[in-house]
Picture 1 (spheres, one colour):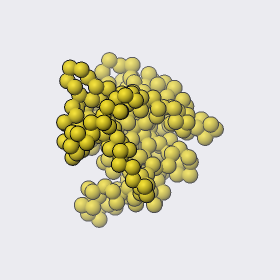
Picture 2 (tube, helix red, strand yellow):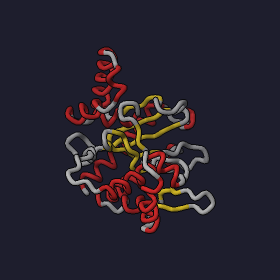
Picture 3 (cartoon, one colour):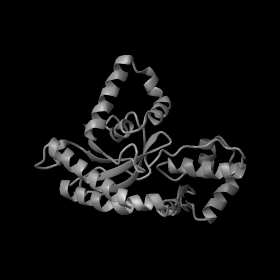
Picture 4 (cartoon, rainbow, N blue to C red):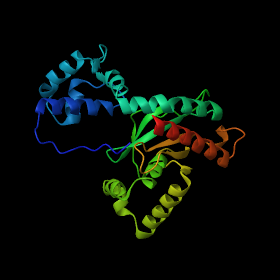
Length: 259
């Protein structure tokens, strides 16, 4: 799947911009927010967004909780996104394989794609284990600093890679030695199709990630297993886990190529 980019706006629609600002802001929050809190977060007045909130609630995109008077995103956007043909197709193909992998290894797994130069979780398969890591669908991570992001970078063409790195503020602080080290890492990932490392985003988490597709394919995604520790994956060593993740990624890619 090609990276989704934001195009320059030629014709401004202020009311639409405000509504989208509200939705995007609330989607990034972990709790319902009041009208005043939303206004403060967006740098707008409470009166300015009142009608936006009322209309979004009326159309079913927001839910207003009576007790706190806070607004939160409903499942309408989630349901709409799953109706988009490419995403629905990827989910239909990938999820059974991902669930099978989760059962075999006893851990959850998730599928990520590039979205506006970040790495977005597209699909998540739950673990049958009572204790596991769950990664929320729609979550956005730094591409440069995440395990699946490095897999996607390694398999991106040079133009896409340069664009992503230009948007990563931390990359500008890297020394030439660090950049060379990254290039060697990406070369190895591109050759093997797999990358496993400790997460730079969460302490105590180790991740295994494999590419789904190739640079020339319509779908380029990363299949990732997050684990609290390698001991959670019983009776399997690192090579065995990597082999199963890579095998599952290959099955998904093969089926998508025929869809």
